[in-house]
Amino acid sequence: MKIVLADYGAGNLRSVSSALARAGAETIISPDPAAVREAGLAVIAGVGHLAACAEGLEREGLADALRERVESARPVLGICVGLQMLFEQSEEGGQGLGFFRGPVVRLQARRVPHMGWNTLSVRGKPSILDGLEGEDVYFAHSYSARPVEELPGAEVEHGGPIVAAVERGALAGVQFHPERSAEPGARLLRNVIAWSRSA
Amino acid sequence: MVKKRLIPCLDVTKGRVVKGVRFLELRDIGDPVEMATRYSEYGADELVFLDITATVFGHEPIVELVERAATELEIPFTVGGGVSTLEHARRLLRLGADKVAVNRAAVERPELLTELAEEFGAQAVVCAIDSKRVGPGKGEVVTHGARQPRGLDTVGWALEVVERGAGEIMLTSIDADGTREGYDLEITGLVCDAVSVPVIASGGAGTVKHLAEAFEVGAEAALVASIVHEAPERIPEIKRELKEAGWPVRI
Image (tube, rainbow over all chains, first blue to last red; front, side, top):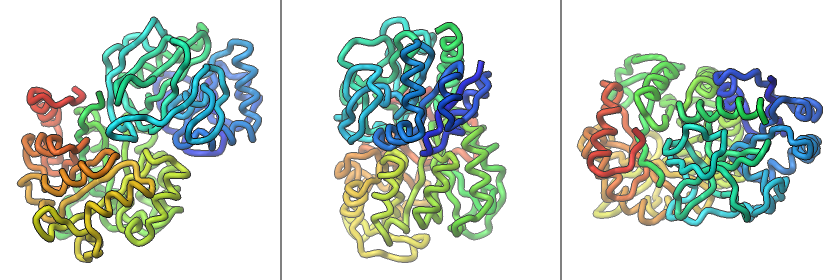
């Protein structure tokens, strides 16, 4: 199965790509909408502002490719700002793809950005989080998705509960960085590979 | 709850990790990515690579180092030292550094912090501040390996860099650096109280107690050098002791 990282022209995707390769997947980075449409799993990864991510995805025609995948229930994973992209309007500007309902809001905590390792509390039975209850993973972000509905996934505490991961059907996202989360991150990626094969 | 971080700092020059006293008698102690991987396996939470020879843009060894670290490391890393222009910082981040630390360039052109935060997000921008004690509860920002005082109050500068876009502050007390007698808790505490971003305490760590003291005054992370370079296998023990003392750390 081939994984395609959607290359929307910003940031570095090689760290994620290397981590997926270590987890056993054939992974390419591509700006080609056809490649993103046809992959076994499409990944939206990146850091920084949601607006820049949204703009890049629309400009390259990748947003439409992702919409088609979601309509036909083919697996899509968002990482960090990629998770936020699965939601709606962001407070820092920019519009997500709206696959999940809810805004992206600025974190309300004593220290922002939320930076460092935090402990996952898994909610429901999301398959990408199998074996990750109570594990520590690495976060680095100032904004966070706020789902309007209850979604299977995981939360962490930082000035209140915040979304760490979501999964519904063939659509999933993680706010943390699996490629920088040591063994729990590798486990997440192995789970993602298995999930995308069966989703 | 976010964990307190232990961050080994690797001083790098010409692609190798070196150790020395105040830039004198530099001794080669290993390959940066190999050492970083070992620290990561022992439980370091994050790493800092500091190019201590303040390279100019395009210096190849650090580029090669960042590329290798980005693909091989499984924990986050920051690159600093001689990051003097937007292009340089951008290049390091595009190559896969999770964060870039800016020091003197921020003092000389503070807009750099804003430009970086706009392009990469505040979480990728660390402002390194070197502070020299000039009175009780008072620090002055210094640059050029502490030789040049900049006439800026440390706490005031810390507030400004956050306002301009820095997502983290790495605060080094020049007076404590290298002493192994503990961090300068006074200035560290003042900066931690003043700003809303995480603060990494730096300079002076010699014992586990010193790390706990930095956390006590509000630091989110402790930068360490000699205590882990001499015995990286002690990292698990250091973290266990911190946990036993009640600090949230990743084991």
